[in-house]
Image (cartoon, rainbow, N blue to C red):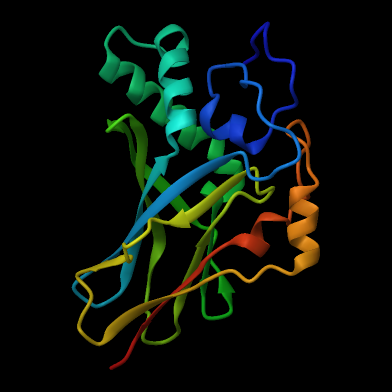
Length: 222
């Protein structure tokens, strides 16, 4: 959908936040990223010790939360605040489908793309919007046979997505023989310079974001 006031190109941020054709506010030029998300992840295990889904919560930065909440009142479907939040959550997931929900998953050397997103919700927490959803695997993944790795990032680096400070991903139902490690990004200075050179109305290369992504690894032993 489009909006008469929308004059900037559609970035991935538009796909994420501006779902009802909302206009982007003016922002400072010469710096990337333009929005930030604090990420929380729970890997859910079944009784056999296999991972069945990754539950994610994306806590959006205050600026874009305030902007979206203000615009939501006029553009989202529904009569109540709860209905409007639910409508936006649904549209977020629909629009992120072609981007694999900004989530890259590997089981050993195998890329896992056959996932489905379920139960999207959007809530306001202390003035910030929190999007929650679960990515279900078509087949449960055995982290003993090979480690399960994931990274959550915007490919263009318009949005920076990092695990929330002072939190670690949770292994729900995992045994004491399972552990998770987070590898921090160490982007090449050339990539940093490339990101900083992008103006507000420019989109980064489709592979720029991966250089700034945290990498998580879940590994279990017999």
